[in-house]
Length: 151
Image 1: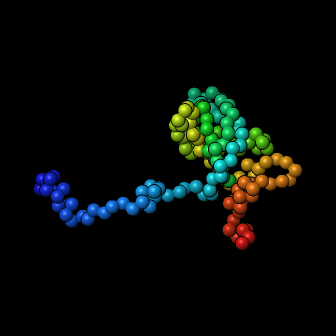
Image 2: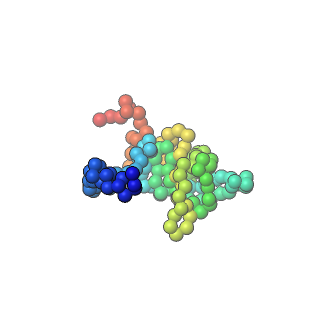
């Protein structure tokens, strides 16, 4: 059968339908984050090693955070799976993390998403007189087990 005839047969037997607006907005892959991210700029120190083994250091800010990690903008190139050490400048907590996304950014630099090895709700906490911000309450709530949540 010729390609033209096969195309005509396909058009006859497979009905064409118009896409609905909701279908156009449906993500191609499902959401993989365990907890939602919150837009929260937190100053970070980032430590790592180049592929040649040379140590590097960079100051950055988070774009968004959750109890399992966050995203930030960096000038230094990093690779998927690379291990970094991030230090929250506000509370001086340091945690190792793994790079889970690297994307080019308009205007220079790269977007980097990183993941901790376990949920760390207190890593993003502000030091202070025992006060907790609204963002921190949301992060703590997201990390709590369903049985611990109050209605």
